[in-house]
Length: 241
Image 1 (spheres, one colour):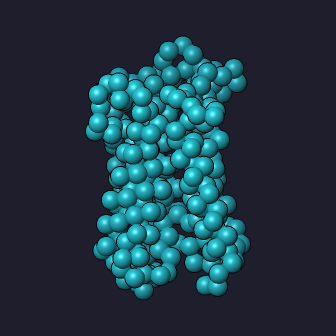
Image 2: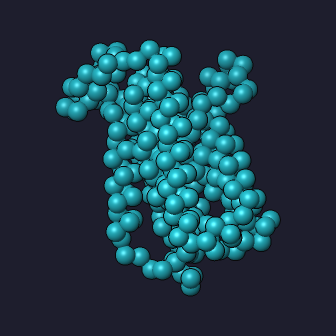
């Protein structure tokens, strides 16, 4: 068992905020860098699509966090949707972009240059989650495995955020090297689908505030998102670029 020096709640919040900001900064820089090599893609994106992405991600981020813990929040009288969810941010941003594209009349995929920055950003953000220890609701269940981590309560736990860092970086490396049919947006859809599938599985290693048919709120969101992602993957795979 590894021992982790716990941070105070205030320090944990500060560290998480710094790394979350860094995740957005690095992700945005990688996205902008990839777009510079394709000016026509940058022009097709347009301001409305960027707004749709940001608004959708922000809304989904908070909404799915509330879905994960509705009973506790309801009893506490909280209606401001505290907390954040990467699954909600991903799906909300995706939906927001699709709505904005439909309004703007954009028919091409805008996700080709987004999947890699997204995965790198998730890895950086999860480091903040891990360093926050028990102050961030992403820690794992108790485990007897030798790599269990004591987050300050004397109980060895699955280092769930570290698992996710390894997964998303491995996924980024795989999708970078994988030879796929030349289909616009295919890698983004594969990245989104793989991440949703991962979250559906890894959530079994985390405490669940509530479950329905054995799945937590965020897992049910992942199921719905996986169905959509699978549909989009099949449609994209079959279409000509």
